Length: 297
Ligand SMILES: NC(=O)c1ccc[n+]([C@@H]2O[C@H](COP(=O)([O-])OP(=O)(O)OC[C@H]3O[C@@H](n4cnc5c(N)ncnc54)[C@H](OP(=O)(O)O)[C@@H]3O)[C@@H](O)[C@H]2O)c1
Image (cartoon, rainbow, N blue to C red; front, side):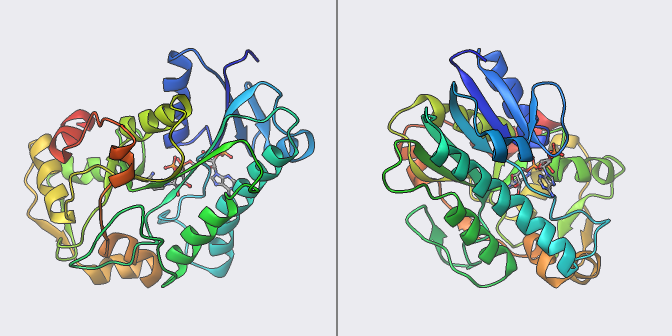
């Protein structure tokens, strides 16, 4: 690998693929850490055994088992998979960085916003530490903790708390496109729950900006500045697809399908402002949800 190499955990996924393509287009070499061996990949076992390649300038972790996989029941076994796929992969990176002779400039851990307790009145920013009030909040807190580097490390640490990622090839949009296309689109529950979101291009550009901008460190909210509800999103996505949005998926159906704990991801949400992200100079390409929806449609 050349001097501009980025190692991405979970580089085969929805976010990871977009990020790899963006970085490759910008002249970086990309190496993926995956469960499966392959071209331009190493396995987690190899990362644990051999560490990071010497010329790694940045390590980014976007690995994680899909929590909202409707084919998987919310059993303790599945919860353990969800947990390990985030905490153990993050720990592997931290160990590899700690043991590296030549340190990468930056380690970026992409986690979630579920540590912000849903509230009708409060608008959270990165100064809010988050609370442990359910499985997902506990996971997010431990995920961020797992990413901590020893105090004497020279590697910059950036922890991005990502909202729901809007992009055409995966995540929420992939599962919504078909029902909306056939006119069955609509809000979830009463639609008043906040929906922290970010366009995939912005999340990946934010990662690239962090790699390239020395002053960026600490926690960043990976959400767009446009604070919206599930109902607002439904209207914007329906308008972008030129489809009606009369249908509503009742809360009890979501709870039946996913179990109460996971259903909370869809039925509740917090209002979140990307204060530090903006202060550090990141400029959004898709600050408004209607533009983000138009792009993915
Ligand atoms: N998409 C969103 O809206 C969103 C929002 C907030 C946060 N995030 C977080 O961002 C990360 C990536 O999301 P994504 O949407 O890109 O997910 P994704 O498309 O499901 O991809 C995640 C990648 O993680 C790896 N992975 C899956 N299960 C794993 C396991 N049990 N152990 C180790 N690795 C595993 C897979 O890589 P291999 O098969 O190559 O091993 C997969 O390609 C996740 O941690 C997710 O929680 C996503």
